[in-house]
Image (cartoon, rainbow, N blue to C red; front, side, top):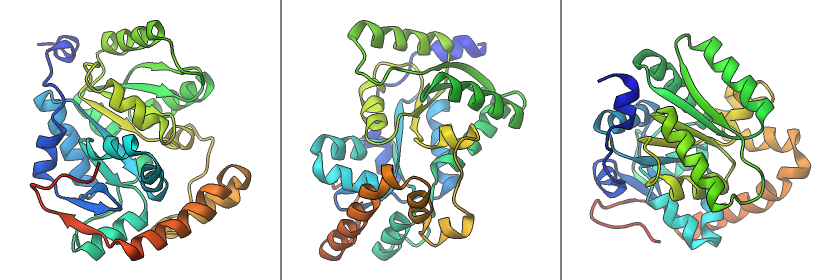
Length: 278
């Protein structure tokens, strides 16, 4: 079977619960953070493609967890994911405090690069959804330069407004016709999580991944914090200094609230049979 035919072959309906049974989750204020490292995340995504299972990946830090405290639907979306990765160091430290000592940060931009490298090796098609046409063009060029043989099979920049049902159907058709195995979604939190949850059962692609700022970073339009700041949990400070007007409320309000909430409700490893709070 050729690549295009394989991409259009029937897929298993979303089975996030089955995926969660094999990967433990750490309950962080009701959000089930997958107890994984970067290799685990890439291996699980690879398995979904091989088995034709459909899942989405939430790449989640303090911002996503705190947004989920105010929005029961967003909390459910995080807990129904195939993976909810520990994107920020506070998620890693929470997992360690709960006893999941092997958890490592699964950072969205790094996960995107690792998956694109594997996609180039295995011939998977990648679709880019989000941001602007200019960013998508530069992102596409940069990724193809970095990973010779990478198949970027399509890209779409949606309007900022909500799509009409007809427009959304057209997007679904375009992605399906591209034969993509991975759809990279760069819409920021919580918009990208809502989009993935709404489309995981409609698209043929096995893997949807919300990576937010990774589009701008890999297009060369946004700087990453130095690795030492990432490892020490100070990436938020780097981003705040870079974009104070946009991010001050997120970090100066959410971060203290997160610390207070964690002091009251300690992270814990969720027993396999237990559903995270929804």
